[in-house]
Length: 377
Image (cartoon, rainbow, N blue to C red; front, side, top):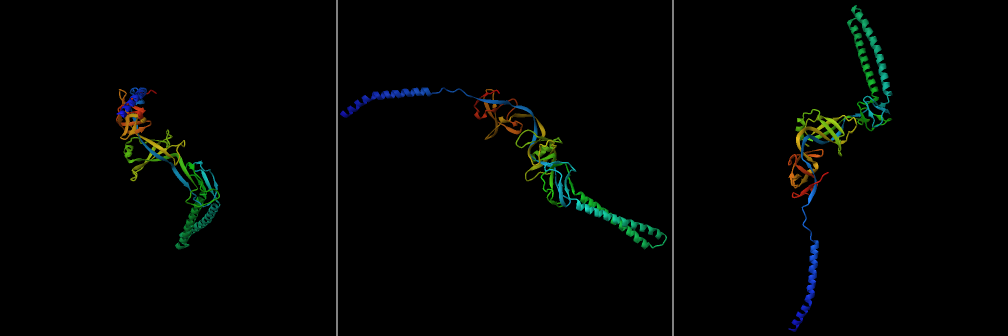
């Protein structure tokens, strides 16, 4: 009983201190809570830029990657064997048709031509002698001074002499032709490549290695392929000389304009594509053989197509969509189907209508419940 009484007296002595401490803690907590409590936020509007959906005539185009090919390529080879004595051009020069390119030592061929002419002169003399004898015997056989058999021997000899002379003349022509092969001239207008054989080397007639390769680059061709699904549109086009634009593969403006000149006669069954070729004048040398370029060809125009800026179209898990601004400045996520892109615009098949407003910038902060504030540029 005495211990219990002492414990109660101690509690009575301690309680006032504890009560004061509790009051101080409670006051501090209340003050902290009041200081950190934030006011209820007002509805935040997301700043965005917008554009109005509109209609316009849109060209239906074919887009592909093309490879520039020379209009003609010629590997210049020697038609006569001998020593290459002179090269008349520099590597990379532009040459004209008929321009001198190479000279081969002509002396062996000149000697052959001289010999052929000498043989011709000898046999022509023998021919004249045989013909004169045949003429004399023609008079004699009429007067029965010689037999018909003797006369025919001389006429046969005259015919043989004429045949020999004809063969000699052919030999002279062949020798002249071989001599002309010592001068190698350009077969076309074009640009030369690197020399394969230099002056001083021996060359062989009809060797597999060309002396130089000449490419015709004005005009020039661009070859490209399109899927067979676009062949129907291509054949339905009424434009017989369809314009084709060539752009750098890295992107940029059109650097050359040509016309479609060739459509292959079969679709490749392995790739499902068909080969096309366009011809470009290339007077400014913007296209170079071996270069890859982006190609576009206009097939037709789609009138009154729905277009929006390309940056308005977003891609999500369920496909492409745009944010449409409503009258109360709210937004609606609207799925769309894009049929093609033209310049900086996307052509929409369905999902939006002309006159509606779509968000072009600021979509990342939007949700279907967001309100927007339209920024003015």
